[in-house]
Image (cartoon, rainbow, N blue to C red; front, side):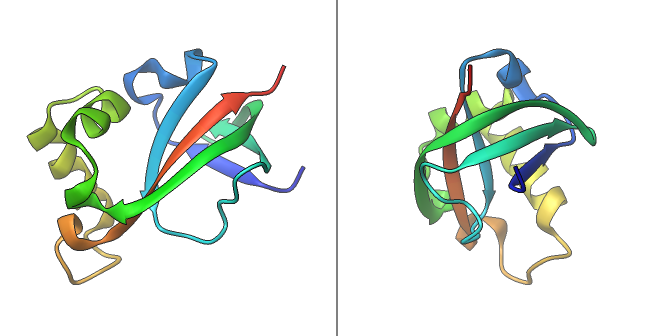
Length: 107
């Protein structure tokens, strides 16, 4: 398996669930129906299949989904996204395009 996704942190303990989300800067790398090896801090944990990909600006992703994904309040979550992406783009993070990805662990 060549597709990989690395998590630097197990946000909201999501990797313990059979179904979990992640919000990533938009990228054509993510394809529905494809398997991905999930890494936590560089270590392989399990494989999962991408069930759904929703592409939108961060400002249009419902705040409840953002908070559930990160485990933080909406304001703290946006602060985290700004910090993570401040060097990548000159526009405000709320106007950047992201992918809300829904994965299911492979058995």
